[in-house]
Length: 248
Ligand SMILES: *[C@@H]1O[C@H](CO)[C@@H](O)[C@H](O)[C@H]1NC(C)=O
Ligand SMILES: *[C@@H]1O[C@H](CO)[C@@H](O)[C@H](O)[C@H]1NC(C)=O
Ligand SMILES: *[C@@H]1O[C@H](CO)[C@@H](O)[C@H](O)[C@H]1NC(C)=O
Ligand SMILES: *[C@@H]1O[C@H](CO)[C@@H](O)[C@H](O)[C@H]1NC(C)=O
Ligand SMILES: *[C@@H]1O[C@H](CO)[C@@H](O)[C@H](O)[C@H]1NC(C)=O
Ligand SMILES: *[C@@H]1O[C@H](CO)[C@@H](O)[C@H](O)[C@H]1NC(C)=O
Ligand SMILES: *[C@@H]1O[C@H](CO)[C@@H](O)[C@H](O)[C@H]1NC(C)=O
Image 1 (cartoon, rainbow, N blue to C red):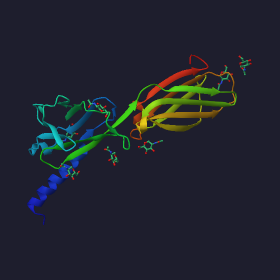
Image 2 (image 1 turned 180 degrees about the vertical axis):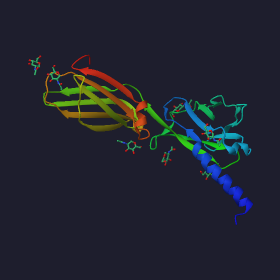
Image 3 (image 1 turned 180 degrees about the horizontal axis):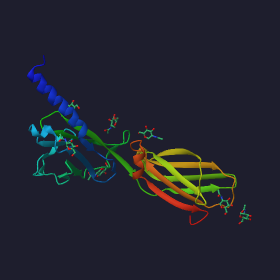
Image 4 (image 1 turned 135 degrees about the horizontal axis):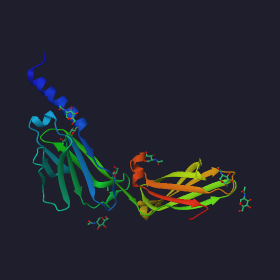
């Protein structure tokens, strides 16, 4: 026989677990020197709110920096009236969306982990243990890739560089012949530490054998910092497209 108290605790535990799954904390990578932006999404109709959990608390490292009421008043408070921190909330399509921006010093990063040194963000629901944390990852990218083709009757060799990037960059090539054929080849990398390991110079070389003369290649390369190890990092990259021979 399950006691009433245990039943209630179990109920809260299960509600907490499902809540935790449906509550999202988003900490996208931030470009060095840019403003940190953290977003939290909460289902608006969750029964935990009806049990009196009516506020969200935001922490940067161990320190509470602000809180928001989970009701129609849309009130958020900045704990220390810190002008570098802004906290807002909206309620839309059945969910609360909280946005926190902080103009902290994003050049201060840990080069071994690519995270912003000492920047762990946490959001916690009311008095419960339900919370999520994330580290802010920092990247740096400065210019577009520069490319040097060495194309002969037998070989297609193209080397592209990023002179300054963090972390090490990856390359995506898209090369078509006469606007139809996709050229397939292999890619090799070279990464060189610069500025005492703070940044890299990445070069990648695309190599293919080709036997056809007098073609026009449309060459498109995207170089992007390998921040999270997923293809979504491509959106932080820089692209360069040119024709060879042509307007290069
Ligand atoms: C809460 O809202 C979502 C979508 O707005 C809906 O799918 C879900 O069934 C609702 N849950 C409750 C407990 O009302
Ligand atoms: C940010 O960090 C860099 C590198 O550590 C430092 O040179 C700069 O003065 C810092 N800026 C602020 C506003 O703290
Ligand atoms: C950088 O991260 C590494 C690995 O987590 C850690 O050992 C080191 O103390 C960190 N350095 C700084 C300056 O935070
Ligand atoms: C955050 O949640 C974890 C479990 O996910 C828990 O162990 C921890 O105590 C919680 N921290 C706070 C400050 O509530
Ligand atoms: C390629 O171009 C050169 C010079 O324009 C020409 O002499 C040669 O015949 C062309 N080759 C083919 C296969 O079209
Ligand atoms: C591309 O066009 C050139 C000149 O028109 C032709 O010689 C060559 O065979 C074409 N290559 C491909 C892969 O279609
Ligand atoms: C990209 O980054 C991920 C995560 O840091 C790492 O596991 C992976 O080996 C990297 N990929 C390449 C090709 O360097």
